[in-house]
Image (cartoon, rainbow, N blue to C red):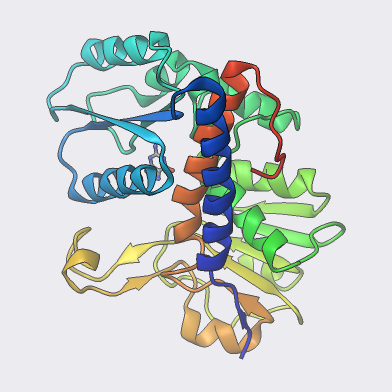
Length: 300
Ligand code: GUN
């Protein structure tokens, strides 16, 4: 069987580093760094994610302010809240939970977000800095994947990496981070003609296309391949299935792929725990940068 790349010890290490930076920040400034979460509407899965983010803030000693707007919220209402949070000196990071209700223009909201507080790295300013290799805030899930690769000492430089999926949240920034780490990167997507041909050449495969158990063991996997599964699919009865006992699965058909590869992240327990850990690290990072403090730990 392959090496199982559990995200748990990696997330714990990131959280421990974040916690000591939070303590140092509090000593210097007399206050804790603070994250504002904005949840619009009542999507139950989003409500769970926001609650978990709040719980992790409490565990690490980060401040957390929880803002909620009704599902019927107007664009102007949400933008007014974002302007207030941008202007609030006691808020270091702002997270607007996706997906937003259909009547709202999410891009306009992320265009408005102060880039210094954009802990998701969704604003065009931060996406541009990332592409130029000058980012201060990294997109949480792709940064979490890089942290897993680092933790398990999986070399990236010179390797062929295949990113499947080209979303703004995962696929695109993942391809950028792997390129910056000197991998030779291919991005595959729904219009890719022969996915199997690309899988066969890949030393590292990042599955982020959002299709339940799509990648099968019957593909020709390259010897020594490392598989990172960003997918998250909940049972069969809607998005609350996980909390009511439904099984989670990823974009990779774990049972058939695992015997064919050298290392693989499980779902749950692989990439999942990293996203919140990286969000905490980004919030601390944003707080340090906004205060003009040097980051003592560049790997925060
Ligand atoms: N919805 C699903 N994933 C994310 C994420 O990483 N950040 C935000 N803001 N919303 C999400």
